[in-house]
Amino acid sequence: MAMQVSAPLVSSTRAVLADWVELQVLLSEGPVAEQQLIRSQAAQSEPDHGVAWTEPALEAADKEILDTSADELSQRVHDELAYRESVLGSLYPFELTVEYGKWALGRRETSDSSAQAAHKAYVCCLLIAAMHSELLPIPSQHTLFTSSAKIMQIESYLTAAEILGGSAYWFGYPRPDGSNMLTAIQKLVEAMGLGVAPSKPPLGLSRNAKDGTVDIVAWRPFRDGQPAAVVAYGQVASGRNWEKKPIGAFLKGHFLPWFAKPPSHQHIELLFVPYLQHHKLTESSSEDYREVAREQARLREKDFGVVIDRLRLTELMAASKVGGRYDEGEYMNHEAEAKTWVEDALDYASGAGSTPLATRDEDV
Image (cartoon, rainbow, N blue to C red; front, side, top):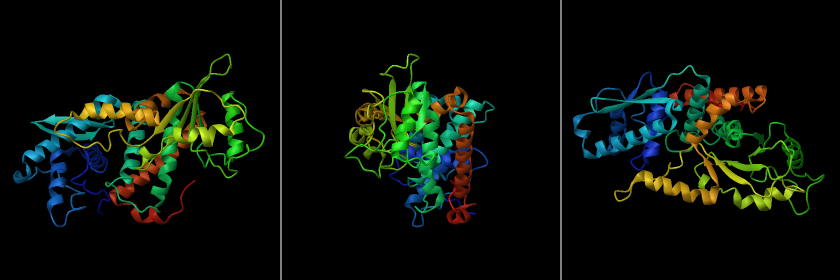
């Protein structure tokens, strides 16, 4: 059976190339060597390129393609993988090794439940990102694709409480309890113990409103129960246009007016994405890649607030697994749903489950 994962494009960024290597590891029986990446890129110059290198062998690449550009490509991807490993440490689900000047990436095994949860979250985000990039083409009507937004909502919700060390509320529509906008606002106020909810929809606001663009609310209450608690409003974005959806542009006009008295005057804005923040950053011979990435992240905060990307979400999931901030039954149900989705997505990526998954009804 042919894999569904496509070879990265010549124009793919180093972050996308590193994602491809990680996907290959998930679908391989052993480590993936740097030669496989080089061969996949060399195939782009061939007439029948595309998915030709989705199942590359582990033998050494032909000498004629080991030129300077290939070495530079390999070094950039190595640097990216090394960066991810340095950030996450044991929470990174892969392990980078170098032998005789050549690198390879393999799976990282662990028996620690916190690290296992982190690994699963990382892989889940990786698969969601791949479906929304050039790496894992999938029909937009495929149940895996249509359900990926909910799965990203689950991953985000299960980590949100750890950001402030408090509690979180699933506000994004459709909500698990099936509530409408007004009822959800009333339940949120009750859960937070902050603010005042209206008894009927406020004038001027749409009666068909679903979530006011807010997917998650997180807060850190204090024992005195007084106003001015720490509150955060988050948006979850799984698609490639996530940089076009700043939550701050909608909060004041579409969400906060639903309260008779908002839970707080000041708030933190959050954006959850399955990508790394530098996912789209291209190379420049005149600028340091990491310095540019850091500066872009600094500027991005001005528009989107705190961005919880794949690395940060993975870190948070490790803490969430043992933090006890969620109802145990609710946590386990969400965790099981995400686990099933990941297993099905890996089946699809390997070519084993592409047909039946495309025709079955979506699980809800």
